[in-house]
Length: 432
Image 1 (cartoon, helix red, strand yellow):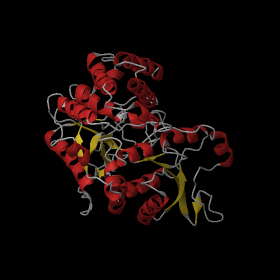
Image 2: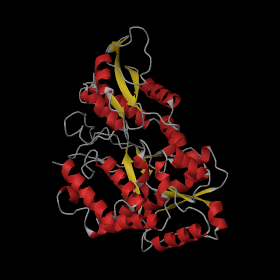
Image 3: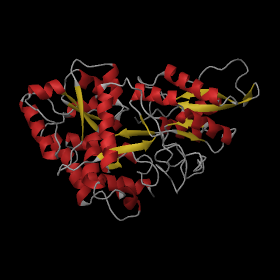
């Protein structure tokens, strides 16, 4: 989960030497060492699923395993922890440990400490997100982006008896829903949450571009392909056409991420393309209807499962004690109770060897994991566009620009070709 930020805080933070939402410290506890322990700052973010109590409990569990460390928790002012980390870094206050911050830019500038192969031994995809062959962010979690969550009651009322396996079938059921007075797709992205409009495009890029060329973004960095090439334009054209056919309601783009989820819960649309983290929200706070799940379909019906693996903790290269910070980060990400908590609160699919989720997980989560497991079995795992990390990733800031461009694509301000040209122009600016 992602995106944007308030930029007026850097000078204040530099002067005050503290972060928004910082956990209060005991008297005299602001030093680098408290009671003989090393005090390390840890940047987290809060959401309705991952609230203050969640982070406090997870921090306590990791700290119990690394008693040499005490943690000073910092909280981002909104969900965009990467932009906030950049702000702190610019003020000379990069935290010692950071949670789910995009390493791009930080790693290349020497700001982060790499993890060794031995430290990554317990991870299923130890090289996920590697930058120049080195891993700076623990690849502890997998998310499927998008899963198409759907309202089973609306499908039944429209006479839809099966989920689509081809893209034409997706269009057919969209038409049937619209003809019956139901908005097919709930898509939002208002305010600070522009990232939330990306997921239909993330699906079509996976099916139309990455399925043919899995390292497409790496080739883009090498100048071998462009966004204006036919495959990417075709992926964007599908989104343009969904909007033109009124299968996506442009008015929904004014909704925040939370309001978009609520619109789906309120029955304002039948399908909700979202990251797999929605699964546990649907199970924990059940809507009045049963929620189903299916992967974004391809033209020919062959499977494609767009995923992101990474999202774990990072350690500053200038942490007060880098080795202890890495030890604590590993304890945080590998702890079974912490992973169970992430699963229950945020629909995580932990990428830790030997990990099994709690047996009492709900049906939407289990359906989501089944999509991922099938992707693993049939070899259909591909990157999720705009979520990539490591060498094969968008340049810093371009995912935000792409999300704004998708809004223009949906509202008709840009056609697919113009959207692709916009991305090529922004890519050139970001890599100058």
